[in-house]
Structures are given as structure tokens and as C-alpha cells.
Amino acid sequence: MNGRPKLKIRGGLPVLPHNVETERAVLGAVMLDPRLFHEMTNDARLTADDFMRPHHQNLWELYGQMAAEGMPIDLVGVLTRIGHDPEFFGGVSHVAALPNAVPSTEGAKGWARQLKALAARRRVILVAKDAEELAADPSLSTAELIQKLRAQLDAVEEGSTTQDSWKPMSECVSEALHDLQQRVQGIDTGVARWLWPTIQAHLGSMEPGEVTIIGARPGTGKTSIMQQVLTYAAEGGVGCGLITMEMRERKLAARALAMVGQVESQHIRDGKLSATDYAGIQGAGERLDRLPLWMDYAPGMDLGGLRAKVYALKRKAERAGYPLGVVGVDYLGLMTGHNGKEPLAQFLARVSRGIKNLAGELEIHIVMLVQLNRAVETRTDKRPTMADIRDSGAIEQDASGIIMISRDDEENPGKACLSVVKSRNGTTGHVEVHWIGRYFTFGEECR
View 1 (tube, rainbow, N blue to C red):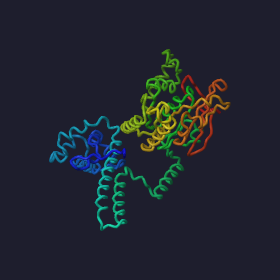
View 2: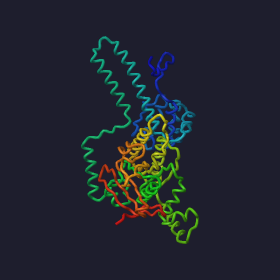
View 3: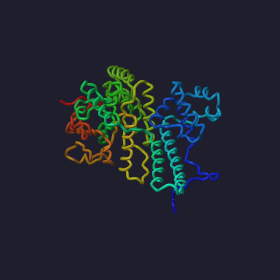
View 4: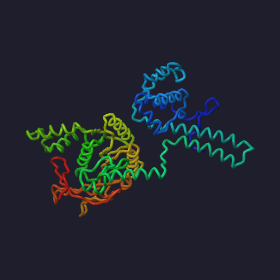
């Protein structure tokens, strides 16, 4: 017996796949954030034909007319436009209620893709129905039958594609030459630079659409180096975000005050501050207040939650006038969503690939922390390698660069080794830097 679900029949006709609530959510989301219309039409390639209900199709076409005229697609504007024939759009009460059908606009582009997929399924069903009729036509040869069906399926495939991403070679070469010309002129094409010259020389600048892994054993300074990297980027005017699943925002802020103000962390923890400490904290606070850097404490977050948060941050950063460039994730091993049946390594590899895809979708650089396994502690050479990435060696495949942190406070106190063990766009190598634990700071390179 075939276990696949059968198409529902109502009134002798098949009920085509659709989701009215998702249609209402998409239409309502645009009225809450009119910029979503352009994102849905350009990125998801959503059209009026992708809606099932006729009045929803009519409303989406109206949105297109308003956008072309430069009119804001908000509730007041839409209600004004439908006044001459409200029933054509489902009625005034129906349209007015659409924004209330939206729990949050964060997932709106995902809903658009869902509608696109449902529309494709409806078209496939109709093609299959047409195939029955064509196959019963004795005047058609087998070749003609196949040709007609192939043309219809090609049209379905073309209409269901969410983005036309193919570029001719001429355009690719032109873009590469433009980037090269900028580098020759000393213009950095990345979104941000690394704080340490040797790391910058090995990895190059952080490029949009790429992921850098920073790995270390617990207590070695993973979170500290992440904060430094993001603070440095934000000081350059780059919108940055830090999503942490381990430490609350106020704790991270206290660390940032110690790091930027050069105030001993123990003094901040105990509240025993000297006049010098007060001055350092005041200066650090003023400096940090101006940064386009946002933090979010999100324990128990899964990949879907991460995507929603980063998409929301992108809009927040743009509204603040600082396009989002770098996002830090602290850290991979704390991501949830593992059902226990899937091997852990496979789950983490899937999450890693999802984070890589997210960086590409939003054209941002993601810095992701990972925890290394214990094997590195048993070796004579304490410098980690890619094989030390805990639970999933497949993570390294998604990263354009991997930095490992190692410290030996007994043999080499006050110093840390930053090792570039993978550089897709450059070279590998390592550099020693000063470690100032009381300030949670990786200092300048050792000479």
C-alpha cells in the first residue's frame, strides 16, 4: 500500500495545496513593514499568481501598483486605495485585519517562500491533470505528448524559482576586476579587518557571505576575543551583533568596560573601584555607547531562532544607519534542536551549513565560536589543529578561515598563541600576542 498522502477531494474536485493564514500573514507583514514588498518580489520572486485566493491576488497586484507609484504600502494607504471597490479585495474588515494576523515580521520572507512552494505544487497538480487529457488524445504522437508536458513542467520550474542567480561570465569578470581595482587603490573590499596585523595578513579582511571559526578549550578566552573582534569592527562603523547562549548581556557589558577601560575585572566584580577605575569606566562607557553593536542573550536557541534574530538585527541596524556587517555566535555547541536520533556530529554539521547559508543570504560575515576536544591537552604541542574541533570535523568545510587559541599559563604566562589553521583566501600560520587576563584582553602581537 502506498503510504504517501492522497489529495483531498471536495465536491468532486481536488483541493489544491494552499495556506490561507500564510497568505494573510504575508499581506499583513507588508503593511507593517512596506520594505518587505521589495524583498519578497526581488528575493523570493513572489507574484500575485502565487496566492490561492483571488482577492489576495488582487491585493498583491495593488501593492505592486502602489510601489511603482512611490506610495507607502501601509494600512491607511491601502484602505484608501480599495475604497472604490473594497469587495474586490475581500472587504474593508478583511483588509484592515491583515496586520493583526502577523505574529512578527521576522519570518516574512520565509512565508513568501512557502507560498512560492505551494503555488508550484498546485501547478504540478494541474499539469498532471492536463497530462491525463493529453495522453487520451490519439492524435498526439508520443514525442509530441512528451514535448508538451516538458514545456509545461519547464514553465512550472521557472515560476517556482525564488531567485535568478545565474550570472554571465562577463559580469563575473567585471566584478572581479572591480574588486581588484579597489584593492590596488588601497580600498578594502571586506566588511571589517582583523585586529592583529599577522591575522589580517593570513586571512585577509572579513568578506560578506563567509564564516570564520574561532576554536579553543574552555576558559581560554573565546568570548573575550569575540568581543574584541566585534568591538574593533564596530569602531570602524560596521553594524555588528553578538548572539550569546552562555552569558547575559550585562555580564558581557561588564567585560567590555574592563577591556576598553583597562579596569581590572575583579574590581568591577567586587565593586571596589579606585578613582582611576572610575575614570576608566566612564571613558569606556562613553566610547561603547557610540558603537553600532547589539547583543542578545538567547539560551536554548535553535537554527530557526538564530535566523529570525539575525534577520531582525539586519533591519534594526539599517534603521540605525549602520548596515549589518559582522555577527558573532557564542557558541556552536550550545545550539539546540538535536532530537537524539540524529548523530551529534551530523546535527552540528547541519547547523554549521545553515549558518554558512545565512551569511550568504544576508551578505554578512559570521564569526562562530566552537569548543575543542580534550585531545589537545594531552599532546606535547599544545597548539590545536582542525582535527581538534569538538564533535564535528565537518564544520571546517563551511569555514573560510579557522583561528585556534592556545595558552600555557605555566610555561608561557601572559601570552597566547593565535593559530590560523585554515585560510581559504590566504595562508596559514600563527602569532603570539599578549594576554592580559585581568582586562579580558588579547593585546598586541609579541615582538
